[in-house]
Each structure stands twice: as C-alpha cells, then as structure tokens.
Image 1 (cartoon, rainbow, N blue to C red):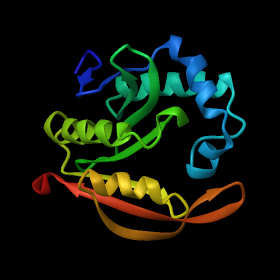
Image 2 (cartoon, rainbow, N blue to C red; image 1 turned 90 degrees about the vertical axis):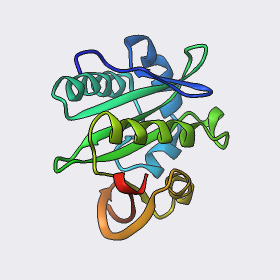
Image 3 (cartoon, rainbow, N blue to C red; image 1 turned 120 degrees about the horizontal axis):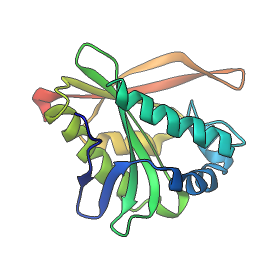
Length: 177
C-alpha cells in the first residue's frame, strides 16, 4: 500500500493525520482523563507530544507496522483517532481515543468496526486485540460492541505514573467475523 487509505462510514471519514490536526489533538488531549484512562497519553499533553505522535504515525505507515487514522466527521473536522499496530504473526493491536464532545454517540464503535474490517480484509490479520484499564469499562463495552470477546485479565501489565495496572484484553478473530 503506497498511499495511506481513506475509509468512509455512514457518519465518518477515517484518513491520515495531518499537520493541521495538531492544534485539535492538543486541545482534546489536554484533559487529564485521557492520561488517566490510557497507558500512553501523557499529562499535560503538549504540542511537542502531538508533533512526535504525528511523526510516529507517518513512520509506522512507511515501515508497514501500523496505521493511525484520524476520525473525522463528514465535514473533515478531527474528532479523535484510531489505529492498528502490527504485532507480527498476523495480529494487530487496536487503539483509539475520541474528543470529549463526541463521547457516547457511537462514533468510536462505528470507526472501530471499519478498522477491524480493514485489518482482516486489507491487512490479512487473523487476530485483532485491544486492552483497557479496568477503571475504563466504557472502552471494554466498545470492544464488545464490535464483536470482541474478553480473552484475559493481564495482571499488573501496564506501569503508569509509578503504579502497576491490570488490563482487560479483548480479541476478535478473522473466522469469527
């Protein structure tokens, strides 16, 4: 795949992140809740963090190890992001975040369904998995809505701010799609 794909759903456009997205990324991820609910979003979130993440998103695409999509409304406004990261052996890890104004409207579920389909059909994945902190059950509900099943509780699997956290791991397999 030489060109970054664009995926359209009923309400969304999933496309490559761009420089113009940086102010929105910083604005959304300023809220402490993102750091509290994820293992890899720092607080405070700075413009340098957004620039680093944008550069990383370009590198993983060029290296063929991942796809990080901007989640946009049909007018092209950034709402959040979603990605698949190749973990070899025909499996990939799903991750996502959504701006607070767009929570509880089904946008992440809609985007995640499209990305899982992309992973199975276009990337040839056999397994797609995702994890969430146990104190973020809303993320687990999204995983269930897209057909994932809880596979395990990974004990003290993530270290954040000096504290070890358990993660719930969910997965879906190509044959179950």
